[in-house]
Amino acid sequence: MKKATRQARTKSAATSAAKVNWPVKRIKPEAVELCSKRLERLKATVGGFVDVGRVSGAITVIARRGRIAHLECFGAADLQTRRPMAEDTIFRIYSMSKIVTSVAALMLAEEGKFLLTSPVAEFIPEFKDVQVGVKKEDGTTELVRPKREIVVHDLFTHMAGLGYDFGDLAACSTLQEFVANLCRKPLMCQPGETWNYSFAVDVLGRLIEVVSGRPFDVFLKERLFEPLGMTDTGFWAPPEKAARLATMYKDNCEGGVGPFRLKPEDDFVPPGLWPGRPYYVPPKFPCGGSGLVSTTSDYLRFALMLLNDGELNGVRLLSPKTIELMTEDGLPPGHGPINPLYWSFGFGLGVAVVRRLGEYKQHGSVGLYGWGSAAGCQVWIDPAEEMVSLIMLQILPNLPAGERFTVMDLFKQTAYQAIVE
Image 1 (spheres, rainbow, N blue to C red):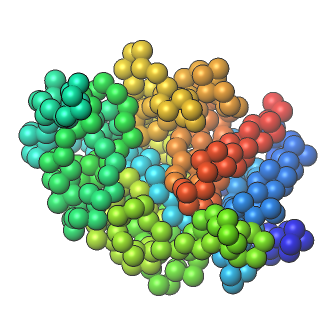
Image 2: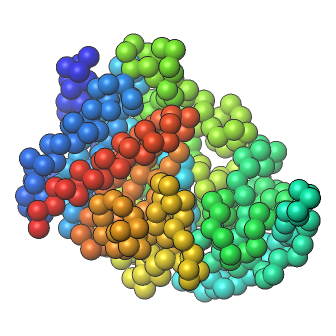
């Protein structure tokens, strides 16, 4: 099986290389002070997860100083058909959509459409009547008025007090309806006081619609995807691209496909979210917090644009000062790291930000920023090392969290230990 897996990797790279238009040139690692021998350890780390059946397949890429120094496809995009993981494979990127939506909103902020301190209710009137649910000593919940209004900055930083109940999405047919429904639910905490992962970025998608006068998905396509050349990124995989969508898997302890112990779950979406929608048909409405599909090359374009202060190959989406603000820790003074068990860092405008390496407890740099997704895709952008580390997987979140984070963290650790200057 290990031999077959290695053959699949080789076939994947050989058959796909001619199809993909990578944003920058591919060079030997030593040209950008990375060690080829040390990068070979990825075969034992990421490749090892594939060989023992903990993941079906993966793609890893490391770009440094404006060039691709490492790119490898591991395992299969579909185990049943033995379709190898290929450079043009399409992935559900789930919460990595949040960074894309945040960038789109920041583009409109640069155009003067709103301030980060603007009350959200100025653009989405339903926010005028939100209330906060406060637990009382007797276990009941009391509804109180917020101490202050929710501002746009709170949406970027998940400080708005919103929650993450996917049933809210299933009950709605439009983005406008969804946000209105969300405003009828009590806030989980006071705005600006506590980081709480939520639908806040989906609300940013509605804000984009309101201030731009364009449907959210159309705005992304016209203003972000087309200019950057992200030709395979959108909210579904149309028929001509459907065969390239990687199959989603979940761990099946009772036996799945061969020795891999993985069971296909291609119709998976978070509970209550677009029931029966396997990303082969258009969604009821575009969700900027979790709805995009993309390829490794497309997302690398996006990440390199951010690393290069908002510009890539002559296309500028954001100014360097906006990138500077986006990647600064935006949590209130004294706020601890978000979810210190796994995510020991601060948070900027749509991205996690490493504040101190000792707090982070992983390889990286102060100022490293990025985010990951429920299915295992993850991106890290390091201005200090001029490096992007990107891994793409399709594994369901019911795989134990430690295992999902282990493969992503081992990939990044192996990328950093290859830096020799």
